[in-house]
Image: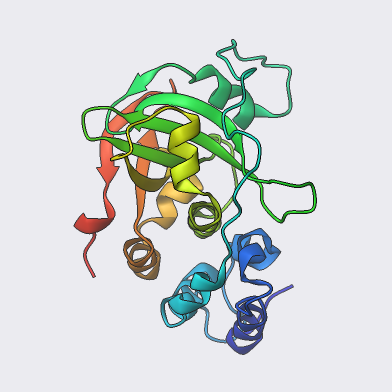
Length: 234
């Protein structure tokens, strides 16, 4: 199915409503990589443009203060099980305890956000701690063969950044109270999400939402390529 620009905008506006905006990132249309039937614009660029004009809608995403600890005692490093269909989780778990350029040490994976079962919240893919800069990154990680759009990554990690109770998070992980929160997409070099970074509205949206981008090579090591939101133009 191909949407016209107007049809796509109607879908977006519906999910910018206060009671729905926290689930916008999970909607199919933010993951479409095609072009509009009439104007021949990328779906992701049309959506990003609309969101840039409605950033206040995200302020209605409610924080969830988790009653249990954000830290899960059983989360530890394990080798990658190549037979598992859950490749992202396998790689993320294998990154536990390792230190990477720009993001520091990976201190957790699949960090839960729900307080009760009915909460509309997922799990943070990776948490990293940069001791030198006193920063904690909440990271949205995509496997090398992921077909998800960068737009989906950005919206998911930004939504999680508003849901998480950051003060409780750093207390649960016993980090300094002066720790600064940061958020980023962590994707593979030349993967679809990286290629989408070339699009102008996508860059503007990342800057507006303070979302950074870090790139991995095929060996799961952070490359010397990184994009901080304050450095993005436009």
